[in-house]
Image (cartoon, rainbow, N blue to C red; front, top):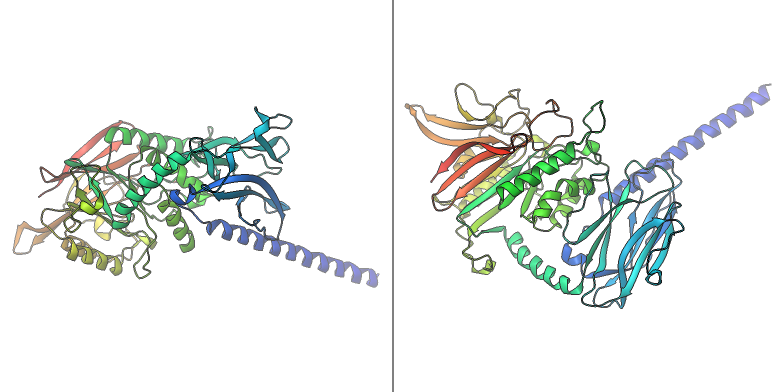
Length: 539
């Protein structure tokens, strides 16, 4: 009996050790998979269209072994969100060649039911069978006029997933994997001809001259900025915690932004953080494309700074900036300096231009008509390195006839005024702001010539508060003043304390260069109209 107990105990110990090793290998595999996703390379549009896809295949790699791409090809994971108990992972293998060197290339990609052959089957090639569906791709001889597939993406999302990047064609048919995955993948194809390629390169070169110079051209007497904040997009259709069916929160937010862009026709869109919710996002690249769909569709220039719910780690933040900066009409760039707090700190100079065709080289960049600054309130604070950046900009660009606007996500402590104060709008959240930002930074911002600071974060505040400093010897005399404005909440993921009938809002700023005025108002989703117009500054 003792001998049997001995062997049983040894078997138990051996089985326990095997289980621990198995779980450890799985954890390393998941960590490696996540690391691979986070360090994806995001080519610019110009880089993508210099290539053309010449062939497709699918590769299955057993866990925990690494999957190596064949020479001259790239691997795209098809099931990064599969169960950790799945035996391996599927990858799409994309073979490419230089567009100018290719003799034959891919013109289309299709998932068709098993046993079905696409029309004109002579030009179609069967790539891989997923069981119920088969992956086919079509090829043709390269000509200047015909459209070819220059790049392929795999995006992950629900029924509201879209890809509004120019020349990209999103395929709503999900990739049918043999096991359950949390979020289904979809192919998206970048398709254009050689003739279109030349036009895209020319447009990109002109915009990049402006972007990397931090210059925005204003061709009209008025310049309008649309602020969006706290969109809180996720992978699914919205975690609203409702008992009666799925939530359509993200779809409502997309519709509100799209309708507002049509109504307002802004010249620049500023996104002040919490564009996505990391807690309900499995593939942040797809969630960002869904959030930016109406912005990308409008082709209006935009710029983004982080909030506190977008992503969790510095490496993810860098990847997000790299991806967003690769999108068309985006003014984000990855900073070269590491001595400034946060990654998304920008100063954009607006210059009046008499002609839309005027090249940037003809603009007097020393005398902008307006300065639009963004700061990254990483860890819910603004620090001295960012204030020093504002002072340096003020040394270079300082004029009594120039408007200055400052945007970031988390409010300054001065957004909690005491005593009597003037405001326009709703001021409901009055809890203590937990921030390491110095109160004195408000005076530094005023000293740098800014007329307004506009933030997000607090969903239930949409007011502009007039923050004044009075002369101690003459209380009726204001020494300096600045408007501290809230955007309110443009979207929602069900995480807000508001009820399901709450009103999405956004803030608008408009400069009239002729009348020398800066005004602001808000737009309401429920009213479908502008309201609370107010004067910010008359120069």
